[in-house]
Image (cartoon, rainbow, N blue to C red; front, side, top):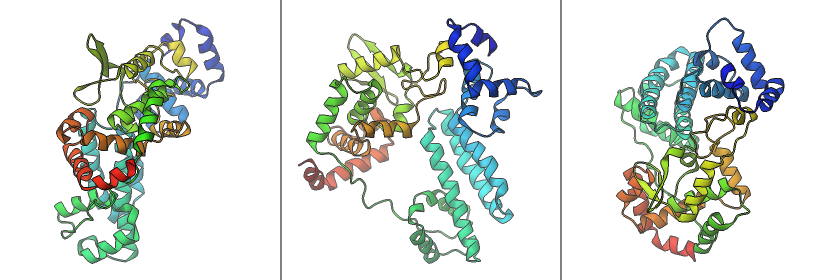
Length: 368
């Protein structure tokens, strides 16, 4: 780390960072400790902004190896949550969390398919399981004696947990910890927020042509409206997924390169050439971020929640635009093509196609 700082082309940002940054003070304290610097040592500290920044700097400098921080967040949460559970709950929750949720997360991380949203979803699944067992304890009821009527009563009492509890109930049913229970079907209002054709076209033109908008806003807004990408997936796009040749500009969203409109291709090319650098020490280290949308920490992408708020402030809502783009896509191309190009699960693309056919009159009314 010292070599990286002293070899900076411009020393003044480094000096300012060393004098005033909390991260520099935390780094000095870590360097003075007897134990070696490891991810595990940092995991034992409070996970503040300073800790995350120091970790990113150490990874950039080569002191620590790179790792999937989303998986690490899940593992860290499980490690600190399970010991606080009552013994009779931990007997059930621990194998569900470690052998089912975390093991599946590690497999997905090995394929580079584990995102921040996936980690949040897995944590919610485990939290729902804990909440469910606590509810059974309050009723002085055993998990093995649970029947469908009582489970339906819990679903009615906690309607926001319908999706999150599904993973746990399927797991308990497979291992015969409970009798077979019927989970609620994920039907109903598949998607209700859409844009009219004029709104959709006007906002897409703004993203491609309005030079008063920040470049990042234009890129993200266009990717949402052209390819129905969620913000969580856009923030994970790395610069090596973009390339140009004699036929045009291409972005590999999942496995196959997608041809970009020329103006969007120019925006992405400019973004890679002149990325936003948030910290002085990052500029001093002259480390190019691998992400198309660099975040506040070196070699980390922007926070999806902040990106969504940024688009809303500029009058470019995400959910309604993405739903409209998805309907446009599945009514133009076969679902399997949409799945391959946009990185969707084939069943998800099929569900959107069925929804478009079944709700065509409602969509036409929304467009009008």
